Length: 271
Image (cartoon, rainbow, N blue to C red; front, side, top):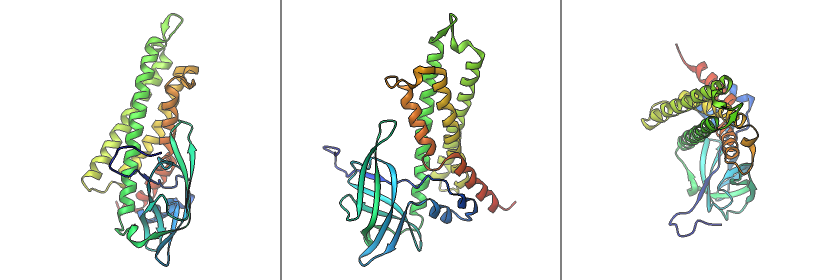
């Protein structure tokens, strides 16, 4: 499957491994943290580099023409550009619970020319920061719309001849969800502003992703609970927002992973 009639090649960006690792607590630098989360390893080969590793649930990978892969090297974490027909690259299509396209990417001694490595030492960290911001922005859109739909449902759905939105318990959950959505918005824009101005944003990114994960989890569950059984019907749109929010919750690291990053960062701060 390809995008017809377009003048560019679809490229899938392979995310960092989101599996939490206890060793991250002891990471002293961003480089060490990056090495913990990279899902691939790269070793010098005869004509460039040999890459090994695997990553599941890579968005757009089933139809992408090329892949941007972060891999560990002896000199740190680097980005590599791989064509779809690279020898040693295996693509297995997957279908996620929210119906979106994805694939399992496996590299077994995949040969990559030296020219296909992005040599800049900060490239992998730069890409990871931008990917984290993109995930937070996506989560903001998901939970914001989910809350809007839930408020509308609470105004029109009646129990005992009254809108369920008039019940105190429901109103409290909606109010908490509103605060969570605004927290995702505020922390996202704070991190994005600092990143756009080339200011240190490590802690702000961790805070933003924490709220995107933690608040996203709460808002998604509140939306489904207030909708009751309607919220999980496959022919009703709310279940799509729920599964999308759950996926964004784990992209780029869970809430616990972000707290670990913040703990490591605070350990290096001099007061």
